[in-house]
Image (cartoon, rainbow, N blue to C red):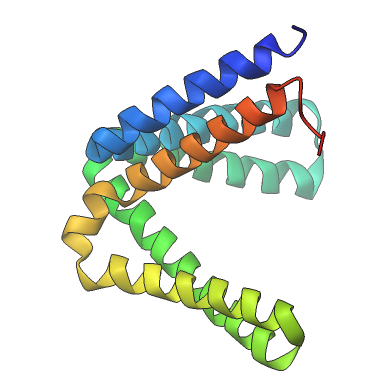
Length: 170
């Protein structure tokens, strides 16, 4: 079976998703720490690139962004609870704006079935934002972990189907 890698990745993703679903706070903390380390390493690589690949204004811009990434990464790693709250606010704001823009697009730009699908998607985004901000203290502790669990489970299922020798057959 030449799709063994996809099958294994799908199974691992499902297992990770179910563990994240069972303990969303631990998954939320994991998201915070992973994001922190991502920013630290991105900042380090950007600073390296700033002095090895850029000149003048580009070097200054890359250096500034690299330092900001390093500071953001440090904040998320050193202060994970505040990082979780900050990332949850960011998710809530993104959902709020996504919902507003989708609803506007649905009612001003689209017609037919697309209008309803995009409109429902926008309404769901607004509902999720409302759920986050209506009980923020509880939401901050688990929102990112639940999002991670849903993503891992969805990814696992799609990888399992993708790895199937029957893929694409009616």
